[in-house]
Length: 249
Image (tube, rainbow, N blue to C red; front, side, top):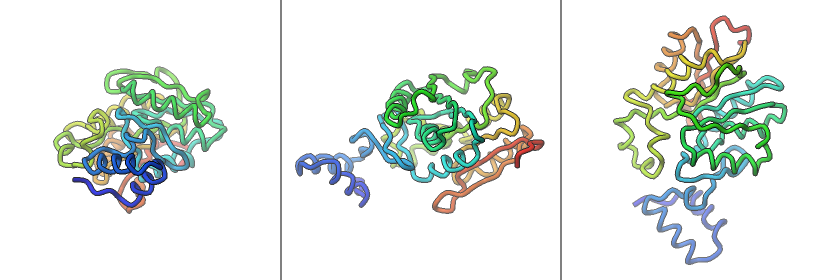
């Protein structure tokens, strides 16, 4: 039996006026349903984003990744957001940086991209957002295009650990499973898509709280330096990777 948080109760009270409906939703949340999936949206950064069961529910700590990307993107720049899910990071960047000329949002899940497309229209940035379905572990959807930033909040939980987190049971495993050591997506992205970084460009990743050493090793093996940033709880959460010979430090 899950306990309803104060924030969840506030959202339920604000969303539903009928007492019977409030009670039904509370019972569903207590039984393990994610409130975001019930109401079909969730708040991130400054806006509500469309959420369905093919998306991870955005977490507040992921806002630190968006903040880093907003600060790093050069004027009139472009970016790719790999494993975009609901699109909360990439669409926030497009919304906050009106000068950004193009954002390419990629995910394996067509359902997640459908939610991202709806949010792009609601935010009014759909003309600058290109949404592509692709498996970045096997496909090369970036081609020869260059980007100032390549952003990703990929699946990064170790396969054997997923079932030890009861709070993740309702969310899509596809968006959680980072392989045996949780680092398979980072290896692929850095090893394959470094060719798509413009001069002075950077990777911006969300990482697990215990993955700073792992991502730093991947960076080093590929000729990058990694700068690790904290989340709101003081845990390692954001990794910025730049080529060692980059002119932008």
